[in-house]
Amino acid sequence: MIPAFWDSSTLVPLCVHQQSSAAARRLLRQYSIVVWWSTSVEIRSAFERLLRMGQSTPSEHGGAIARLERLRKSWREIAPTEDLRMEAEALLARFSLKGADALQLAAAITWTGNQPKGRVLISADIQLLDAARQLGFQTVSA
Image (cartoon, rainbow, N blue to C red; front, side, top):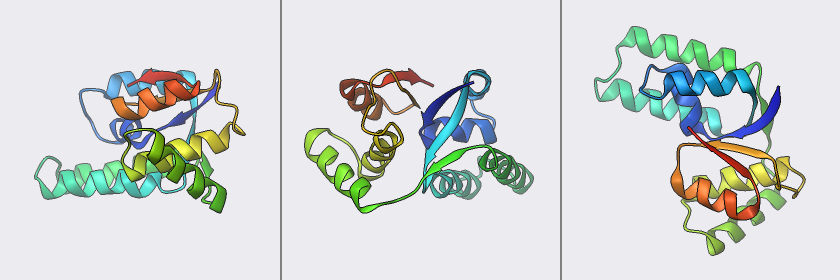
């Protein structure tokens, strides 16, 4: 299986039934998961928001958390470092990214050893995909 950096926007549909869930499952059969250290927090935030908005039931919410825990056992996580933070800050000056997306992209760069050319980054966020593409990542839109 090919390792790829996954943004949280592509992992939520693996845990919660959404329009993009089938596409996300197809990607999971092709790519192993590498994530940023706080990805599970972002995903849990999405779950809580769906529950508060009445778009998921308590039962669905519990199932989503269980699926996330199963995913976490198989993914590789990039830990925070001072170099990663400095990279994220530099990315904010270069690209139109939100802070969390700059951290995601800096983690992806760290994962590649600063050699992103040809490495895969999967996201549903157009701005993140555009910045990653400009840096040399092979991008996959989910």
